[in-house]
Length: 222
Ligand SMILES: C[S@@+](CC[C@H](N)C(=O)[O-])C[C@H]1O[C@@H](n2cnc3c(N)ncnc32)[C@H](O)[C@@H]1O
Figure 1 (cartoon, rainbow, N blue to C red):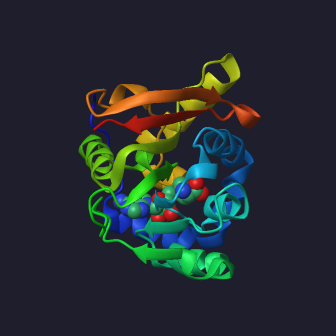
Figure 2: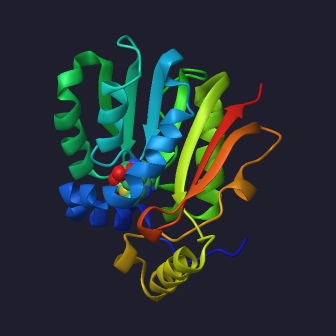
């Protein structure tokens, strides 16, 4: 797959430190795919969730207020100090169940092998290089217990005329400058998931307000 110009970790941090709470204005196209993802993560039985690139923790707060069992824990990770601060404030009502850590932008998660049974990554992989995407998937495989579920949403190419036009324009803007689109470019998720490590258990494409998103749930193979 072609390498494209993407944000460095420093650029991603700078952009999302600036974006802060304004990120929640994107929920008009992110929330429906995230609800679809949540519905296919068997959250009623989860014990420990980790989210890579948690943003303002808008999605996390919905999960913890919903089907997630009251004893289940949540760890959010983000490269942006502003996002970490906003997330901690938003999740404070969940007490010790929820914690948020700032990362240095590398995929490494400071947790033992098999520490979690759900790994969520929503609208983050499309910011990363191909090597980083594979490194995040490898780290998800390490920190998930066997049988654990990986849940991802990404911006993707649109399957309809209108949503296809949106993704074509989005990609063109990203090529012009990643700063215009927050570093995100539409990508195809399924071909990037190594099938010797994951079994895809759910895949969908939704286009709320003609912005196309791919949703994938994959089970960690032993
Ligand atoms: C488009 S936002 C999505 C946020 C959130 N998941 C949501 O759906 O609202 C991308 C998030 O990923 C974070 N991010 C970008 N690059 C990252 C990296 N290398 N490591 C961790 N977080 C990163 C950004 O700071 C930002 O909060």
